[in-house]
Length: 84
Image (cartoon, rainbow, N blue to C red; front, side, top):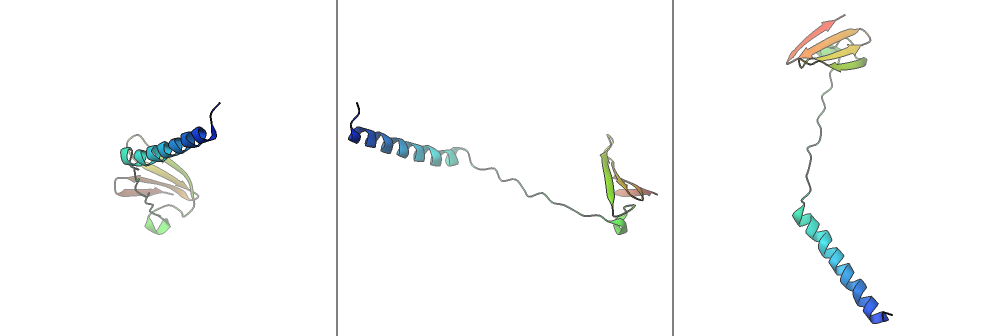
């Protein structure tokens, strides 16, 4: 059987080792900071067919189709075409 003193030293050693490994992990594996996502809002006054978007589809050619309650808007590069 282990004496109380031997058990106490083992726990203390394990606690120190755990703390060392914890701080070492920060040194070896620095946190990766992701940039916060940015959002832009577009409305009818910007070129959408309506302010109420119901669908969004991404075409293979890079165009974005935005379906609204009053029509569809195609966005490709910096050009907007609205179909009502």
